[in-house]
Length: 279
Ligand SMILES: [Zn+2]
Image (cartoon, rainbow, N blue to C red; front, side, top):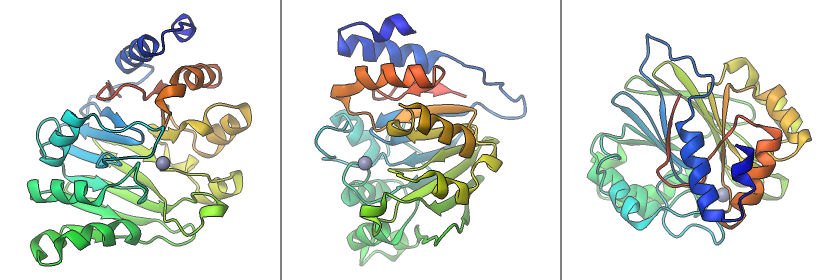
């Protein structure tokens, strides 16, 4: 893997890495009782998480994004919004927080209209923005659930056979008013953690008690994965079996990929849209 990241051609390196890493089975033991968990990278912190016919979209329904960070390629964005394969039959839509590189309310609204089975579960700051599109549509309103976890509280929800635990994870002291959700999704017998734009400290993580959860796959912003101090924090307080690095600015993908590989050699790097990996 190392020789790949020293290549100067950023695009080639990114493509090769993602193809290699997303195809690499790692040490995952496929439990015979469960279908494999498949995670497809959409853009930035956006993913499609699937096991059999159960599908969850998280942070994938956005449009303009934020300068410097990955956006959804236009053809995929349309499929996302009109709920077309592979984004058909989505059961649950999750959004960590309302920032434009994680949410476009119109994009979520369009998916909800095109997929009468989808349920949105998120914070008041997200759901109030989406609900504004459905003031006269109680049938869609009923599929929007608002959760507001306080302190280290966990709110548990189920949608079909999909389990969800939602908690507040700080976006940083300077942005304390932002409701950023940590979310544990259980499907196909596996647990996936997404912590949004977390800037949680060791003390914050200690309170969240995530290490007890036996997290199978943790979707973590790259800034937790590039130095030894943060690595210690991830290992001690999250202790996931697998890590996917997200929110990597495309122009800096080569640099951050190299750093992440030094600290977490087995981590998967989310860099190429629609790359998929099974766990
Ligand atoms: Zn962000």
